[in-house]
Image 1: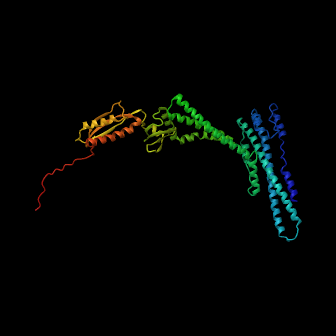
Image 2: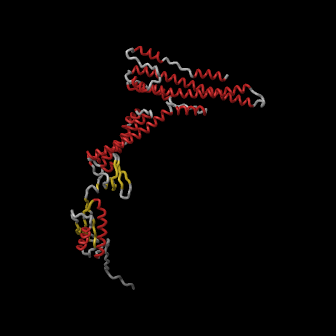
Image 3: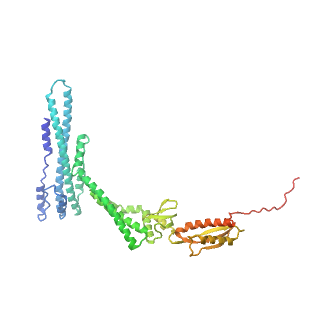
Length: 466
């Protein structure tokens, strides 16, 4: 009895929900015989062909076409629902059979129960029928996905021509996707495996994911190539600063990558139109919230245009002294002499004094030596001048200057001002200081430390005690 009831129910489940699509199209086309709607004789029409067919259609024709595809989609949804009901019924019958077998086992041990044998045979048949229904559900879901894709083509063309497609899309989103019945392990596993192996399910998404990764990889390669080409053109033809060249090439590379990422998202069947619209709508809010960032952006442009420093320069800017490492339109990165990396906002740099220490090829080394008042200052000047002229890194032109500069509280100060290459500045300063100290020690010239003489005057003799 269970078997015959199941066969009858399965036949009803797999019956096509009749949709008079051809007749519906014929009736609707009567209002405009000159430009009839597309006759959908084959629901499996390739998507690229359907895109060509719907392109010249008018808004009214597309609305009728959308209704026709929507009817097909609803019919397919009804088939899937009835097939799922069949699976539910089979599960219920299997549970009933299991209960009957448990009752038969409680009967007399040696008796042969013909009804139990028949029930066991019926159970095997129902399991096979359940598996067949699950396979049918997977096939129907694959067909439903194909119909949804073709309806999307019609809806996209309809929206471009001013039509409304929101209700259709809501329905598509509600009925699409994989549906797993977690109450039955076999049903859930069969649904997952069926979706994973189907051409419109797992295989489709695997291909989409492969296209997504491939587009990102290709975009990354193209972006780097374009950045190198732009950098070469700017360096050879325009002659901008390295900061500007790097910023422009990096900006172009980022733009190319963003465009490629958007294309990659479309490979995953993600509609980026709402994302772009949301970005445009929130642009004003973002602009108000990022006023400080926009100020840094403007300061970055001013720095790039005026070029107060370049990559590799030693600069004092924004309260930081260090080597310029890199720059973008928001901040500049410095590397200090103790190997710290500091990011300074461009606004802090442009609105304050900028000192480019290594902008010029040559630089003066300013030093000052103090000697005691009892020492021979002319001898000291001669010693300092000999040390400076004997140093191989000191430039002859401009000539070094050594002159007694000031009579301080505790010392006679002699100024020494040789010139050197900017890259040799630190070495000249340390070498000359060390050599002058050694020569002063050999000549017996002292370098006094701050001191103060205190004189005590006794006004009168103290009174004698009796």
